Length: 419
Ligand code: NDP
Image (cartoon, rainbow, N blue to C red; front, top):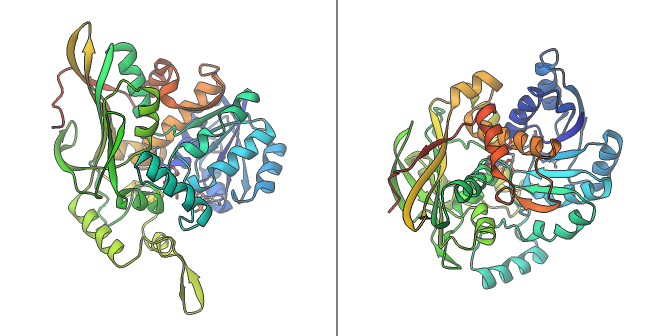
């Protein structure tokens, strides 16, 4: 019997809520807490009568520490699944420590205002020391390691697909396929078509910040920086076909490099169509991706937030998106003295996801691992207290759960490598 509180009620949270409700034996009491209460109400109404999970809802501003603590003390969750924005990761972790709850999220902390001088100073120091320029990094959340350990609580960071499942794939490959891994390429392909000239498949602010930033990869202990979208490759994805993919910075590279120092090179590629890139470049050139407030007719507007309000809500793309995602990891390394290659991936169909939970596959591939991660903690299968990423835990029960609950693996021992 477990009490679980989910923060956020957007695309990812709605999938996680549906999936938790498919396991009422584990998720007995669920509280959905978000900024817009009507969204929580809608999901509750959709599910009531179809699940034995008892659902309650609450309005919360996750920027308000006192509101968080009050709600956590009233509802008494065993775990808080933070499926809202990464801007609130730290404040929610603080509230979990105060109230004795485990914590889970799907994206590394980043500040809402990247022009904040205190944050900026640390950011510039990190660029000098580590040479990567992404706004998000794990250092802020890794600082909580001892606080969570002392209270025997787990903070499970980045438990979506990427980050999340991709790191379980690394742990799985090391456990079952390799003595030593030398190179890793993480490939994220969305072969879905929603029919709009431009829309993002998850939160537009986070998505556009990530894609428009300088890219990099990790090689021989160093971060190698390259201009945004400057490295383009083609790859033939199972279930999707030939796609253009671009090198990006991604947060799991940082934790995999730390936890698997034997891997000499780690790269991350994501597929984008021409229309997406054309629109993104144009929006960036006219300043619409900026987080710096501007004054318009006496009102303060943050351009990227205004743009978010104009774009289709990712949670609304479900009925229109057709095609598949294919996300996975390609490894090269050694087993018993022999060089070998291995590819492990999942294919997920947008329309099948929609039929099952009313959401497209990008939300599905994030919400299902979030539910499975919470399940690992609630069932006592992952017990190491502290602030950890997915590759630090035993991958087997997690991959078993993914196989059973919607994201089965496919493996190849003779994959085509990315050159
Ligand atoms: P959405 O924008 O669809 O949902 C975000 C939700 O958080 C909304 O319900 C929003 O409320 C709520 N929210 C925002 N601010 C607050 C606040 N201050 N207080 C309370 N609630 C708030 O985003 P997604 O569902 O697409 O993404 C959720 C998270 O998952 C993001 O961090 C994203 O980066 C991450 N992600 C991770 C992936 C992975 O593979 N690891 C892949 C895709 C996404 P409202 O409804 O009022 O707007």
